Amino acid sequence: MLYKFLFPSKPDGAATSAILLIVRIIFGMLLMNHGIEKWSNYQELSAVFPDPLGVGSPLSLGLAIFGELACSMA
Image (cartoon, rainbow, N blue to C red):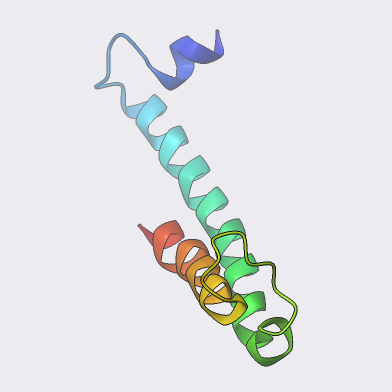
C-alpha cells in the first residue's frame, strides 16, 4: 500500500502530488533546523565534530552543514 502511494501508477494525480510535496517540504524544514543549529554553534562543534572522512573536523562539519542546509532546500 505504501509503495502504491509513493509510486502511483497514475503519476498525474493532483492530490497525491500535493501530499507528497507537503511531506517533502516538512522533512526539508526539519533537516534545515539541524543544519542551522550546527551553523550557529560552528566554533564549539568544529573541535569535537567526528571526522569519518579523514579530512578534518572543521571540513567535515562544513560538509554536514552544507548537506543539511543546501541539500534540504533542493
